[in-house]
Image (cartoon, rainbow, N blue to C red; front, side):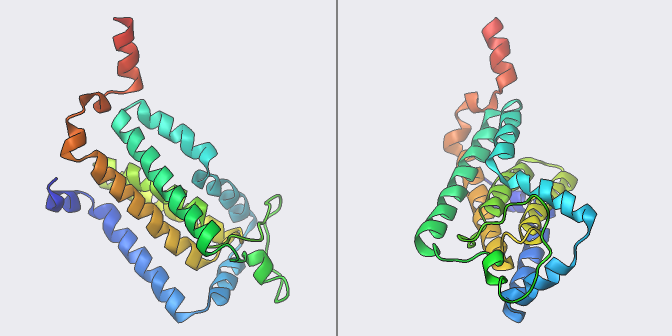
Length: 223
């Protein structure tokens, strides 16, 4: 793969994500996670309550799976990239959650004796396994793949924003802190890039059946 050509064609996702990531890191180095969360929690409205309650679902398997099926309608290679990326990100998240940071408390627990937070109705708040954010990793693993396989800068940027909004929704809903979201955005992004390069390598380029789709397979069966 020509990496210079790749970078040139994906600046619409690489540059904005780099800026967002640096901004997040600067916030984490400048303010405490409690102050950051309180600032985010104050920026609430009835519209955002409903919007982010549904937006957060794009980081869950129930919505990731149908999107992957739709990708398979266009090309198996794309769907396989998304599957591999999602599985890798999920595996890394579970290792961090269950082994290294099993006692990480959620905002609900951290703030219970400090102050009242704004909570969204009908959203179940978890108490443990705050670090890292699985929904954020899932969203970045999926939408970064969609951005990488898309040649149009506008769509690359929009897919990145979808992932960012899922990450923000986790903080808005008081399910995670900024540090949880920032780290898992990296986990999801690294998973996406790794699986993209792996399945786009020369070894897999030779496997032409991966460039078929469910639709072409159905047509072949009819003949």
